[in-house]
Length: 367
Image (cartoon, rainbow, N blue to C red; front, top):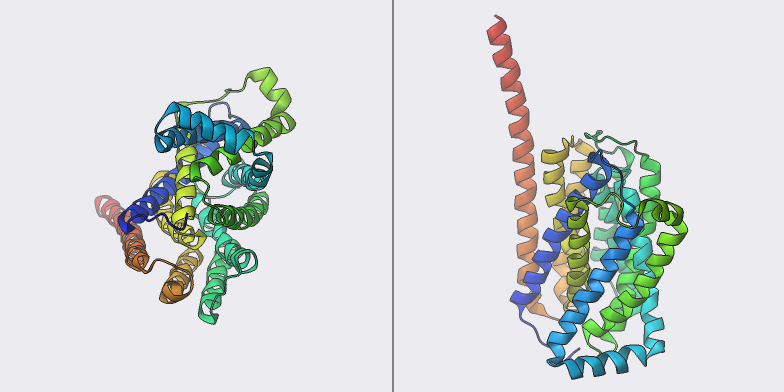
């Protein structure tokens, strides 16, 4: 892997697509879990189908990489079926990711999209800790300070979440935050573990993905049986599926593949930058689509998060990135996040002025 060189443009493309997919996935998933009034689908089956689609897509990418059916067959037989030790090694992140995905469904069923996204950023300090202990990297004092600043912003959001949005199911914030905490721990460990496996050998990324998704399918099928087995037998595996649910599954599948590409060619820290940009995008969409009312505590959390990312960027080149050419994309990503944040403020101000103008007009008519 070390010998593989890809352009900065390709890395920036992967980060951009991953950001857009993550933001869209959050909004679409929340819509299917809280807004729709139809019969609720089983989240465990959605996670299982996602693993199957990712497996099929990875096999397709491996076929393109090998160039011929005979080479594809040889690669699958030698590196997958005749390598039980490697399959076992990749079953660890697949187990953890399966738990994380199910916790994401539970969390978004009980939290606003913006609150979920900001709280979920605790995975950044968790990932930093796993990076230090598992990859033997070091973080400077300024970077650790930025991590705690980020935690402070998240704490503000947890202390006083945003006001209720237009949902049609009962929500339990406590269960939502517990689910987020579990997802955070899973994300930090699994991400760094997978990065270590990818960068410790020259095995193809798509072979590694196939190894992980094979065990992931088995694990998620067990989850379907244990969690919703009786209901699935009674109502069917695809009960409650709508075009929106299929869209969510598609986004989860594509997002998973792009995540593996980003981890291979950059690192988990860069993946954190992508997630930070997704927060801004999903928040704007939540205001427009779900009527989310943003409190000053959430804004303070956003500001602390952004300052933390700026602090991290100042020392990213010398400590965490092996490719100095990524510094420009990082800067551009942060600037895009800042512009989106300012647009959010302007939009909220416009809504407030529009509301005040409407009230004044009504008062003038009454007079």
